[in-house]
Length: 203
Image (cartoon, rainbow, N blue to C red):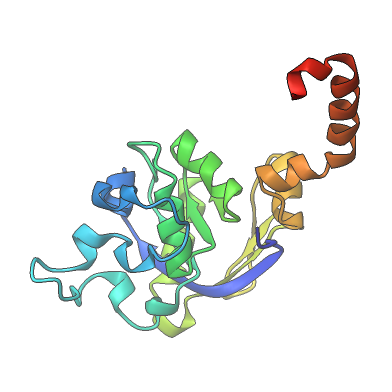
């Protein structure tokens, strides 16, 4: 998993509440188990017209937001089903940080497991960042995970809270598999003892 330290990039404004996972990535895409390649399907139902062409009014179809790495959005983002594909689609587009007043619990957890930082902030602060994000070419925010601050274009810093364990995992690029492999020596030692104690289990 890619480490997350400091991210400076274009922030796209999506002033919508209750954006569910089906809106983020339609169920038809759940047949794949690959984490890559889902970027074009992100927000498919609202990003494209019925004929498959782009809706020019949708924010991610506009410049400079085609290069957005940060999404500023409304409360209860990621509600609905527990599909991890929602995070995969956002990452596939290039979004590495989502800022909102709150998130659905499972989406929030899935984000950390895939190297994405979900930042919870009070509505008043989200409103400020939403306004910043609507400034087109000037819609650049910085997210400093080590210091736990979002830096606005004018230099104002907005602090955010984060669980220390999740912060450590993101800073070091540790997903669940990597965390397990950190204990490979202990696992090997345990398996060695088990083979001696119960050799009939190992053929």
